[in-house]
Image: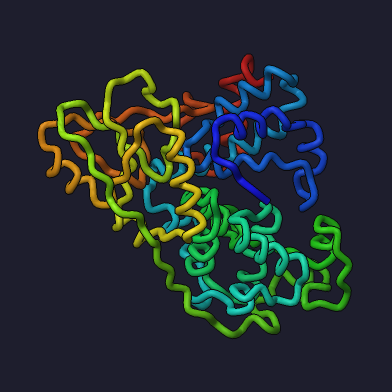
Length: 362
């Protein structure tokens, strides 16, 4: 599985989407998923751009399920806007369980064929199907682990690693958004993963599994420390042109394209200590950055960058994980820009979006 980073390849991927096939098969590991999440997460394209391009070829009715999934991403982003530490502060409680990662998960050796294969794919490609992510998280929760350790493990390897979407999804599985844990049994996994594996520790009814807090073979705990290998800083030419700040969530190649400015990919070591990523992910980020004409890499803090260039103006896009005091902060491009509150559930958020944007999304 490959994720090319050229603009033309991303546009081709968008144009290949069959939204009706997506709606029918998206929950199957072999389904017609878009494989756009890495580009959306890294800000190379926006949900609004994707939806508008999709509507050039397909009706609103055909795109309704795809729209819903795009809005799930924005829902989590809005939660993070209102609480930048949402990954540690779920809506319901704090979670419970072992503060570690199951060794069997890290080794892709749970004994559940579909989950182990999905983990191997994650390691080799940086991709994991969303349903496989739910299964993996469910196994961790049922084995008695707190979400705060396995969630960073998954984030570390994902090309589409997004703090809001990743952590909120783990919280959702743990029941910290709805009060109900997500449970997966073997029958459900076999159905959506095209496997047949009777007799596993998940080959039980949902009634039997709903109160399970440990699973055989997952009691061994593994160390979960990860580190990011950052590239060296490149020289930024002297002068007074403003500096456009890019980061791992803003790699938009057309952002302020006509502005006479220096373009800098700011890789703050503190951010990557808090949210480390793998070498594969970093290579993807650097490949995506090559779409931005004249961009230079600066490995250091924003404060250091300002000290190095004290007379310059700085421009950045809004994101709750990054603070750029004194810079001009521009908004992101939202699919549902007018619905910017922190809603208690996706259902409430989605209903509000459809009501406010009825003419556009209907």
